[in-house]
Image 1 (cartoon, one colour):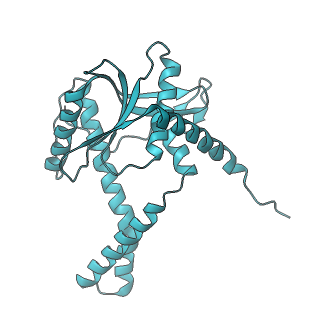
Image 2 (cartoon, one colour; image 1 turned 30 degrees about the horizontal axis):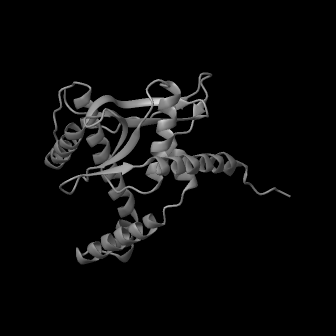
Image 3 (cartoon, helix red, strand yellow; image 1 turned 120 degrees about the horizontal axis):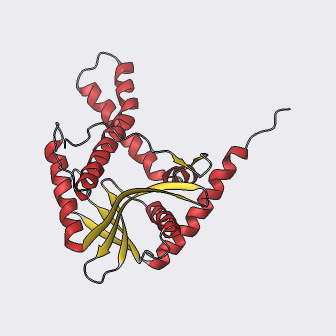
Length: 238
């Protein structure tokens, strides 16, 4: 099998009546600010503008245009690499042949091998890339459900190839809720983030404790409430 190069179509989640449901990441993205992204975007934009001037762009407007577009271009490329890395892991644990091609093949192969090493050393994969919906009215797709080789515990694992932030704990807590709604006899014993940066070597396993998961679930419920109330926040027209 040749690894999928195109971006995966965006998943749609629906309830039993066919109504569209928001995803876990959509809910968290709408309700939780990411001030670090503002600084990052400003830095990327400034660097791209400066490089355009050094490269001799013919006008000030052209250099500014390059800088303005740089954050989105950088983000989209990084997101595409992350999507492909996830697809490689999904294909491997689904028992499919994995072929890595393209200009980023060496970098993706390195990320793929590090991710496999981290997973196979610690866990036995039970499920990969499973989409579920909650009776509470949201959906999501988790990366891995694994059994810990050391103690047999069932672990919910989220693969991150880019930076991760505290809202990732709320994301895992929401996935845990969905899984246990559908699998009440196979409860989740713990959760972890597997951080495998695409452009760096090494990896890191970040364990999420029960107290953090409980706090993450409370935060997700608050974010869900904000998400549902935002459309009602409108000015009355006189």
